[in-house]
Length: 414
Image 1 (cartoon, rainbow, N blue to C red):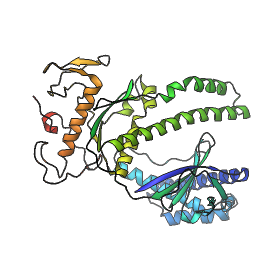
Image 2: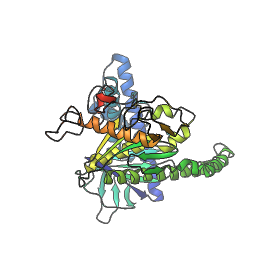
Image 3: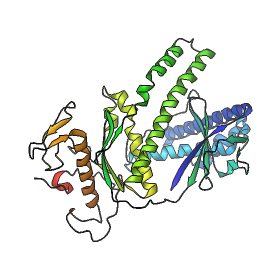
Image 4: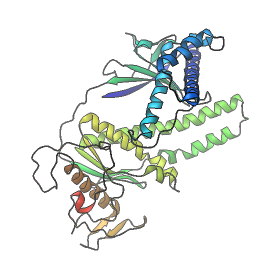
């Protein structure tokens, strides 16, 4: 499997200018190639091959007075821009034909020089790692890297990134072998929320850190200072960087917390089950700021990535499962309940339930039943397993699977 290892880098003042020139040249090549493809399709619906496109927008363009400055930067970075354009078109056609799952991907668009985040990628021919720890980039020179850990293998490419706060990063792509953790018996279901970030089926809770809410006062002051600066002035540029740095601190803290929490859950449990929340829909409600601050999508993605690396299982149950309405003891669906109802009494067995704890236990049971009923497993949880069931991750099947609840999901209904 391929992973990314990112490290801060410290270019010299002269390398800042060279990197800015490289970012601009890569952007111009990308836009020229996109314009050529659009023109060819509009003319006779033809597609220009990548080799011919590289000859037009790189080799021949260098010989013209308008694009002669393309020769000042590494050709490897310019060719990477064309590969990025090919990938963008491939993702678009895969999305249109249904081969790519998830949200619909649109056609590639032109890049703007006003973007606060810039990046350029170098392949194996465009960079080299020195024995003294410096990163040598073609036509840029040796750059100091803040190594926080060694790379597990030789990198296949490196992407140099400048973020909105003016920081520079080197992101290496390396290939690593999955390392399975020692098997454990425990499995856990998770009910995600806003008041409490997560309630686990074993009774434990994870508090919501609310990184954005805690930094709101500082962000508000920085934004007010920015709004009072004259547009186009140097003071406004400085104020914009202060706002970007404040937001960067919030994003970095949230990302680090997601990684630490996901690592702890994966280390302590053989399988983790959670609900397929409609985050994009919830982000359009009055709770939008809190939903974005919770970063449920990032947490789920990190959880799935760590599970794939360490031999664990992450199961995602349907968002239509009435987890807050179903009693985990007798499996009677007790009806809808408003959000202010945090405890309720089951009408079937009379048990008193905590809303979130009961939901996490329903998610755990539904996830275990769905995993056992996956291809290679028994028809119901009560049947002896003749061989180990193959774990089926989300996105395995080409077509959407029908929603299974109750007895169809292997859960007894009384």
